Image (tube, rainbow, N blue to C red; front, side):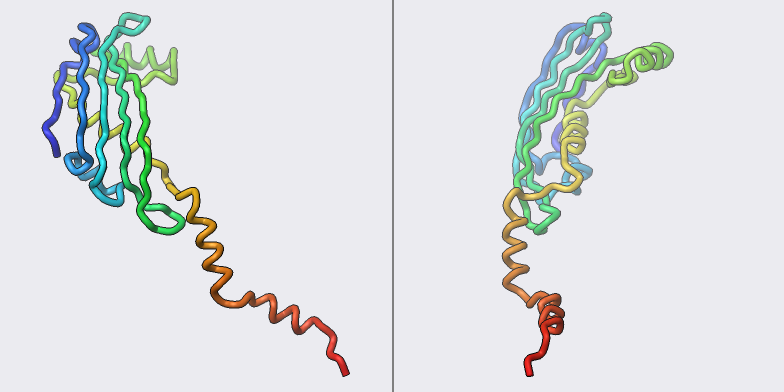
Length: 167
């Protein structure tokens, strides 16, 4: 795993700090790699701190790149684009967090810790951005052609039985 980028999430949002970078897939945690075909590729990320409309420290994370996954139709590797954006809002108090989520169910509210690893957030976004069943756009046609060229249709035999016998 690559070196973490540790931030104080409250100060990061309050002070409008930012971090950006690039990580190779090979440098990421095993929990990411176990979802991929191989460890080639890279992702770029930008983390920007800001205060939201309610003056709460927040972080906007953008992750882009390409990873290789296994096509669930043909079982061959395929490139899969990652384009993700998440906004996290940090809270010190669980009651305030619960009240904020009750007011806005779409809010990604997180209890603020002393340190937060931006790379762990990047890894989370990669995992959440993956399809459960990735498929090539073209491999379905190739499989159909292969199936047609293979063995004869069993219903063709039934059709022959249905024809009347000529005397």
